[in-house]
Image 1 (cartoon, rainbow, N blue to C red):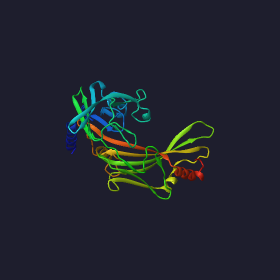
Image 2 (image 1 turned 60 degrees about the vertical axis):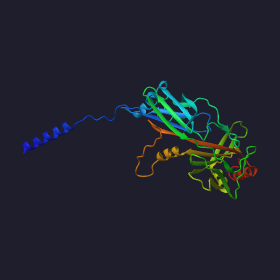
Image 3 (image 1 turned 120 degrees about the horizontal axis):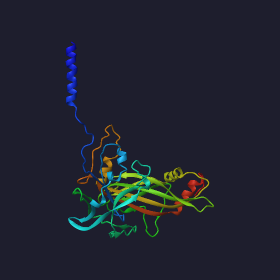
Image 4 (image 1 turned 180 degrees about the vertical axis):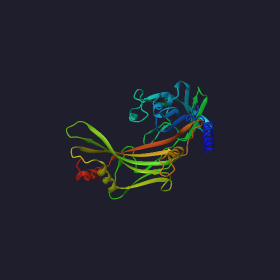
Length: 346
């Protein structure tokens, strides 16, 4: 019996030794470009994030703070945006590397206090397309054209490309916007409506009603500008024919202001203005956001989505339009009356 146990022990030992292999957690180095770019036709300049994925032995959070881990040497990167009208090149806009200060990221894991900058590629100056006759906004990129990004890495020989249509402008139908004297009146005893048109390439629409008010302490010169938002959420398709419509009851809106604006008997407030924001994103960006949204199910693994060749990330477009209204006289009175029993601040 002892001989059998000895033979069995030796056999197990030999088996484990013969199966022993070197296991490498990290594979050999591979260049993996990461690109993020969202074009906005209403912006004077466009910003593109060009960086790379990294993998190494040790703490990944430490690597993230090392410039070489995240960014390519700018001497080897050539990037440009090409405006296309079908198959015809309209113009080429070069992208130049710019280091920007990361004030807003000081509390994040990736913030390096010894080098508090992030690298972006910004478009060089270019001429605008047109001026919106209704709002007076400058449109910098032609919404009917397609835009292609091309990034060349002369060190690796890799060329990364992608293209996107632009999200066009929408027209605000309600409330009526008069550029010479835009005023917004909110009826407390009825449903008030925000209505706008559909636009080409728009896949998701967000509408926000923002109320601005000024606040100051009597006897002091400092005045602060604050705001309260009513966000109507996202819409993917027209709600009325070819138009989008959201409604809110006036009395409930005034109650919202009374709830959101903190009661303070030591301050005085002035109703300043209303903004209506219409934010629209293109289909590729909508898919990217949907895929990367927080999971609510048991399965936490998400599919990888990208529209970049030779890399990962997203190149798409979005459009944000703003309509500025004065506070109508009756609406101002309603706001004053709302706060009479709260703090009499307006």
